[in-house]
Image 1 (cartoon, rainbow, N blue to C red):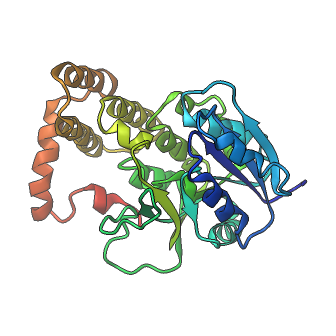
Image 2 (cartoon, one colour):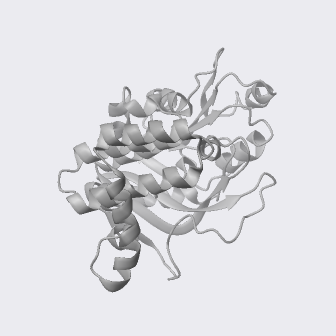
Length: 324
């Protein structure tokens, strides 16, 4: 399988109950020219037996089963990226699902814009049984009906979108260029547990263009085993937030002082809303001061901005700053 357009990576850990449906959603893609790389991070359920059933599938080029768990999903991402031979890579998380036209749509758009670093599609949340969870707009498209797609300069997307929030909400909804990704084989995102994807997408966006597809092509499963959900119950996720923001600010020299202070204030508010124990809260405030030179004054600024934005239409806010 030389010169294949797409490498699909399925990193798995204890998702045996979702694996068959996930792999079939990949094999049923209307775009057929891809290799499939199956990775297991020392699962303790019957994932291995299920993966072995696909070993002889003509799309499968690698089936790698770790003897010990790496402790981070991002090590598995990079293992797959370094094994991949495709021009583009799709990290199809083992517990998510995709529409049959996901690859066809994203490859076509990426090929139309040669400098594309990543192309991401709309997502819906699904529960453990695969039922769509209504009422939460994780795409942040707003009330306006959007059609087609939008192309953005990657650095502009990083500054105006990713600096505020990880709008590329789920890896399973993203196709990205392999030649850009291999540059980050030793990036700090590999050592993170909660925010590594946010840092990785930022680093990727700084390499080339970003395409947003205004169509639901991905289904992001929510359940108690989600690392992202568990991060909300500890301060570790916020600590990684602070480190990612520091990295971003070193890469984005055009950020205004007001915008940075406002963003730091949002971190203060996040710490306050977590209701952590006093020691953990104190440690996060200390990290915020040492890393971003941010004080409680930034929190007050963020709170005042909620009032001032109603009086000053030109005042910078996350929603107003975002490229759409």
